[in-house]
Length: 118
Image 1 (cartoon, helix red, strand yellow):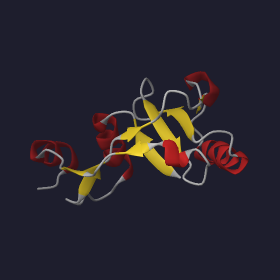
Image 2 (cartoon, rainbow, N blue to C red; image 1 turned 30 degrees about the vertical axis):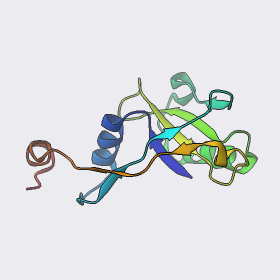
Image 3 (cartoon, rainbow, N blue to C red; image 1 turned 180 degrees about the vertical axis):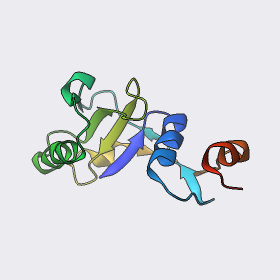
């Protein structure tokens, strides 16, 4: 699975929430999803509890069943924003357009203030 965020700012917050140490080798990849592809969606209300095992099991079922190439899920970090889970084994995966990687660096002020890294 590919775990992607709807925005670069959400991706940065997700990294900060899930990573104990930050490197300086992050990149950003834009992903274009054709409008005619169906995106399965998990609504905020469907995830009443943020139980990691249950959430993971739901994602595993989606992956195994291969219903869609993309699953849109609310972010736990910012529930009003979306995370996109992408299935590279799905037949529609080649239809996604992935941009060239661009370097991404966390602003030093953010690292010093919130993460304590200098």
